[in-house]
Image (cartoon, helix red, strand yellow):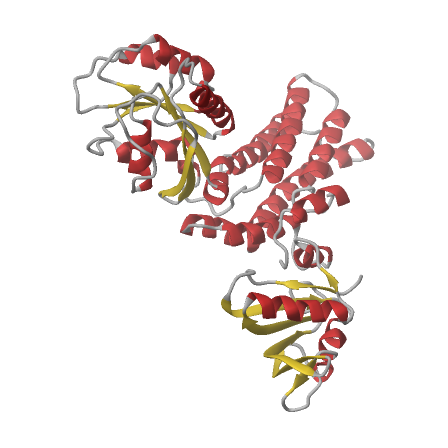
Length: 453
């Protein structure tokens, strides 16, 4: 493969910038532009050695740098790698990369260094995905999840499950292939017990997905309701500052107002939407339309009601427009006498909380409800986490196949048919760590990485 190069640090002013070069010609490319102060060539260095020197271009000094050499296979990518640490100005980092590219390297694609690490057996696909999760981590729990994946804990769990499935396959195959030998009959009840245990493991794994996705990717929470129920006040309260204009005049918020904050360890983007109502105001109509689009895209919807009055037709219209499965009823103005019929709220919503945006009452309860919504309790003492949609889908497909095997067993189907289903489940599960992954899947995974990683 060709020798690749890219900037591996953020393209912003900083104390240091790093240009990474990887491939068979990485050391010779670096030697063509770098001269150490003691005259030593990088080609003469062992791995894990560094030299202080200068980068030259057209015989002119560009910068003083440190060049660090890694020898294959003991590097991040498994190839020869040189990392050039220079001063961190955007211009100088970009200029050194340009010089590297002019001397034989080609610009790396997003995620190509980690892709090469995967292709060279330095990590499996689940570990590679965890690298990007660590880069994206915005809190301690997200970091813990990413490190768990990088340390191969997903892989170890999948190997354990696959071993159990292979043991079942071995018993079934021995009985099927050598019918004349003195091999005990397959105990269907014992087989069902083993499948039950494997399914329980897989279901437990996937139960962590929604919480880990929220911790790593964050949540989009839309705040909606009729005009003047306190949507902007709630947004400001959760943000910790006056992000949205608050007014007694109905229709003050005419567009979606957006802000980011943290609810515990979860990164959250909040959207204060225009109050939903029929209006002749053209600008407000556009705001209402954008509000509806925002509600469709949200992970969670806070539906605000004024608890000091009964539901009106406008409230019911809002309820009719939203996905109730991802909605939480937020009953504002708990500092006033309750007039809202809670039985009617319970008809529509599985969750509600009473708050007062005016005096901050009930806000902690609302935040805890977000934790409950995404299943943070499922993380518990778990050390293995499913953190990506691809992983979740693969385990779900495996679960479906094994449930089909259970049904076949219950219905008295032949053991040959059950053997085929278990083999299918093994083939699907192997995709999680990349053993059976297609080039299309591998390319899709690494295309989401940042340039230089």
